[in-house]
Image 1 (cartoon, helix red, strand yellow):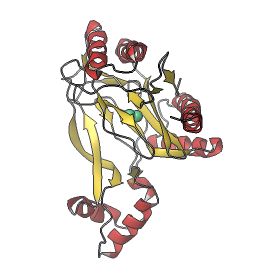
Image 2 (cartoon, helix red, strand yellow):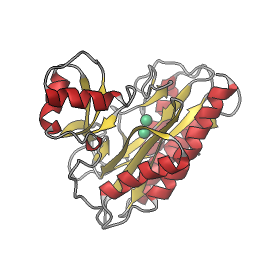
Image 3 (cartoon, rainbow, N blue to C red):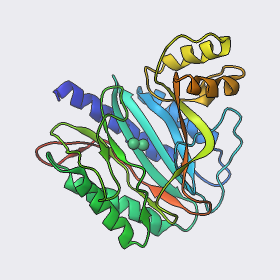
Image 4 (cartoon, helix red, strand yellow):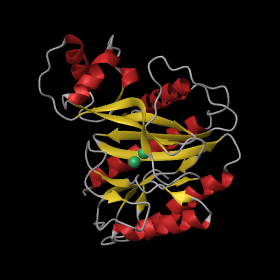
Length: 291
Ligand code: MN
Ligand code: MN
């Protein structure tokens, strides 16, 4: 990685960190999900950085990929456990970072994933097999009496590419990939009171272009042209502003033009916490761009 690339990663990370903490502080009972979603985007603009994916605001048993729908009226409630997961990029160099905001009594559950992340970061070095990270994440979370979510992982980052090859597991059970010098990675432990596995729920608010083959229907064409402004990065249904988009989106997914990110949830009435940082692998101490 050259110095310019590293500077972009660091700039993206610094902005993401600032915006994450500023917006997380505004998550309170009565505030709407849409307000926080829009606030993140306004703050990115004020900092002069782009979003690399729509802010994810996932509640309680849902771990990831929720975002307000175009007509969303949900507000945070007393007792909610809120994951705010946001991403910036500068010239395509991405920062991906998340915190959990506890509006209830889930302090220990939050501590479990936060300490798992800190323990994982301490291990990061070239040639480390990623299952070693997963093992430490799993041990930390289980020491609190919770389960890690084993079918969600961290990931490597590349320019304009949020999930590039390598996955960083939250369990020691799998992961034979190896960290290399200069890798940019996101580590994101999830701790749960539920089963330790997420499934797709009915909601899909986040999409991504995977194939730009021409489509005929006018609504589908409008969606594809809006979607392509995102340079292959994920976008929110909320951003489309295309009438009747909700009818055309499932078709575009079936045709293979779009990928849909469904909300990923553990079982009802469980609670999930998550923390995430973006990290550059160096010969010495890793660089945590979002801390
Ligand atoms: Mn994230
Ligand atoms: Mn991530």
